[in-house]
Length: 320
Image (cartoon, rainbow, N blue to C red):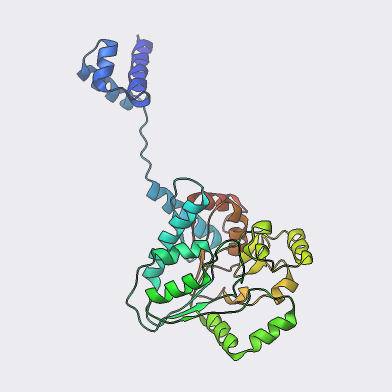
């Protein structure tokens, strides 16, 4: 008799919760009254036949953010909820939450350094103007004169300057040059030297992680020699930060190439009040991990899928 009663509870519960029958439809199909259906559904919950679990996506990403923050000993971590793991969706959502975060933290007298890329362009598109004074905006690394995909360098710097009512400071030089002597001549220029010093002094740095290998914007732009590409590959490069290429431990993966790169040194990112890394997506997980292991950022803004992947790598509290 008890088995028949449980079977009836299971039958009613399946019709209601799995097949989306209304209580009236169940009553008609089983030849019972609607109040009886309601009573059976209540019993199904009380006797453990049905378990109702309410999932709040906001709480889920907040928990993920806390776990990532603790694991990598970050100052702050924001995990954005995205409906699917698709690059354009990720960039748009990260731009949205990053714009809110930047608006919140910027204060009078701040110097903000920023690099370029499509993710950061989304930030600037979403950024609301803020009434602050004496803000300095500076480009952290050189650009590219040719790229199959727009890097939005000028739009990003100008957009940031417009939002905070100031004049931007561009770094109008290549990100990478062919020879260290060329770099030495460029950085010796007093105007370039002044921009580089501003980047070094910035208390807020905003950057992303470039993709490794053939997907790299700099590689597409033709800035690398064949020997550079081979060294980057053999040293298991996972991405770049401000055009400086790193391995999974966050260390420079090609010293000679690094010596030919113009822009902020990775060692100067570590001491920022806010070193904000904004990145997500399957191809950037290793690069983000390397950046965090290398202590190049103290704030991470990413998506929930990337956050989960980062938690699965290495041990717990790895920078502790």
